[in-house]
Image 1: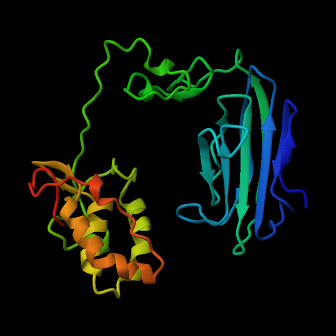
Image 2: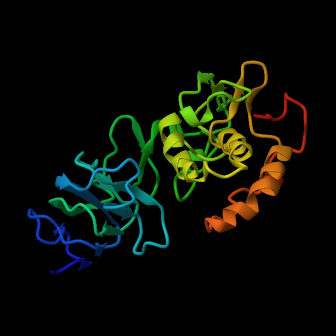
Length: 282
């Protein structure tokens, strides 16, 4: 079955093998789409149905804003049955990758793409346009971060004031991290880029296989402190103290070798303090 390939016309179509019948197992399809300079690519999905998962790691489609998967940002990774949004590239090339494992196979997707001239390109009302033609969220304008490739979102921003980072505490709902020295956390987790407790719970699940280890309680205090940081109304959001990490590493690193886990944290990145206003001892 044809799987992936080069596409160069001003418009075209792509679909998973056998669509609308179930796609074969163990697929890796890569479509590289190129249009004329001065144009961007608008990609629209239809009939989208892949294996449903929380984090899209078994069967998924991933769209890269470049001619290769190793460069440029990822415009999105999608699985399940919700139709992905319409995606628009920042330049004349995108790469679409479809991955399927040996498990559940669904009907897949078909998609169409179209070249759009930069002069014709319009951004929707809650967006602004970079000089490249790329559309970005209005809130990203003058927020202190360069989001446009050419930096135009941060030009002429002298009078802007960046809102202070504010965070409200919320009760810990993940069972593995209840019963610590604190019971309030805060999201998004700015250190590990975790959006909410549901995402943190998914990441913490990989550590549950270590429950039988003698050092699990020491490790639990560290990983919960990292993934579900301590939120105190007085001191804000706190990372674990370096000593918590060092003690867990000393207790657990040899045991983790048995499971072929390498020690996952760099303790030297954590605050070297015992001050409860600077770091947490879960």
